Image 1 (spheres, helix red, strand yellow):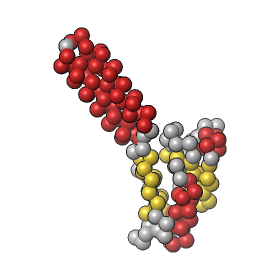
Image 2 (tube, rainbow, N blue to C red; image 1 turned 180 degrees about the horizontal axis):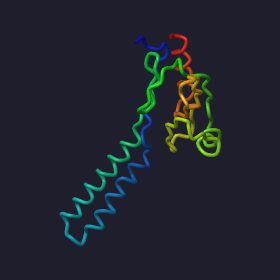
Image 3 (cartoon, rainbow, N blue to C red; image 1 turned 120 degrees about the vertical axis):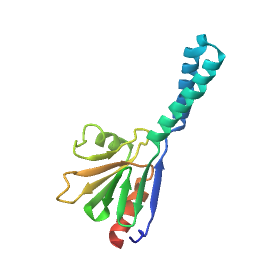
Image 4 (cartoon, helix red, strand yellow; image 1 turned 90 degrees about the vertical axis):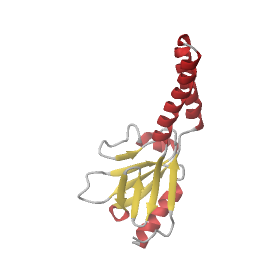
Length: 153
């Protein structure tokens, strides 16, 4: 497998506010356990914060990569030869494509905390997926990497 001319890798991490919310979940659990004593309260604070932080991290750490002739978006691996035109979506268009313009057959790598996205047409006739919707903070760079990988292949 040869590497694309413009390598691309992005990790969509959870926003900072989610870490504050994780701490507040721990505080809430500590307050619930306060009547049982200091030790259960501290256990609730630590355990609740840790559980909420693990959940936030697991959901918020998806990766998008262009490696060789493959687009890897989360769990999906798609050859760039099966992809057509890429359309860069600003915040307003991205919102429209993840709500009322959305096709139920489309592959959505959707993170609501990322305002911009890239919509990539799927040209493989054997694939029923009409397009990929990829939440990304750098849609221009991702489109360039996909184009470079197509020309390299």
